[in-house]
Length: 270
Length: 262
Image (tube, rainbow over all chains, first blue to last red; front, side, top):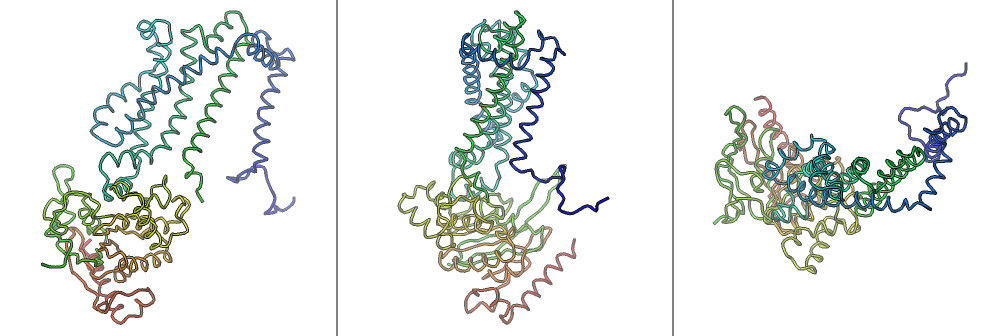
């Protein structure tokens, strides 16, 4: 047996960072493995092709959906619902959360209300939302809004409370009044955390979108998938899933890019 | 009339605890700060020295006694008493220049004057090369310099500092202590500095107010006699000064006496 050399490189090293090259190769490998197993299972006849179409067929179907069947319209409607509902939720949550995190008097009013609503699953409102708003856009937007708003308020409030006391006291001893303290110190201090919280909650909005469109919609990606189910088109269902995944990823990357662009000072740590 | 800018007259602070009990953190503390002088609040932990400083800043309300700045009683925080904390307080989203301009901006100083003042005080603390850097690019000592420049540029009558160099390494600490002597002479500002570092206290202080612990009371006011000919400018000079070692021993004895009560 050879004596262990101290420079011998092993695959598993405790907490040793991997190179960019190794990281990229590992990422590609796991996806190749996934599609490989799928391809072999489907093409080799190991699974019912009606239930599990091959990845090749799914990509062909996705292409056809875009080119011939106006899938882009369904995607547009879904994206529009997410963006609009999320914008409304943010417009309420950010100012309210910052105020609650800054002024205990405001927290004392709203916190008991907001935390109770957080424990009610938003989908439990679907029947009543349908009765109130009918079948138009309103019940979908309302579900997305309800699903996100109470969590976002709580996150923004918690991050605002974490703004260090010394920053606020510094502002006060420099002669700042309440308004200046909130707008020029608390808000810019917490803004990077707010954008991160929004990024997380946008992913949750996508979840509620699919629920809304599957349950009660004739348009959008979720509705397309439910139509496909009626005609046993598993390839189209899988296309829908892939498109939703890609859209979620794209929005996440956009938020990350916005974060870097808005807060350049956070990237310059030395 | 005396030349004192700040008077503390029997200032007390009692905190309410659970079950109706009370804790007296500061008990009838009185002292004065002369114009442009450096007063150091020194004492063992638990002597309430930070609480005294926070009451002067207006960030805590005394439960007894009065604090008067000039002729005006202190009732809350204000720009006439700027404070520098031990924790870093740089506004990370603003460049060094804009950090230093912050106080002047919110107090309505015109842009041209702001710019000039900011550059003056940034030069004074030796950060001219870093005007447009962000605080996250600076070391801990440099960030404290930004905080000091920001407070001074706002034109306070008193600069309050709560263990401002406590988080810095030894070498940076000396540099900052020596810098404070320069700053005190050039900015013509009175200072109150809280510390538990005896050497730092002797180096910086025109007057040391020694507080005893549990509750915090003024045990002794000490004026380093060897400074009668002026402040000492470097740490090396300090340790060679006749009388320094004796004063350090005396304060160590005071600290030990306090420790024994616990």
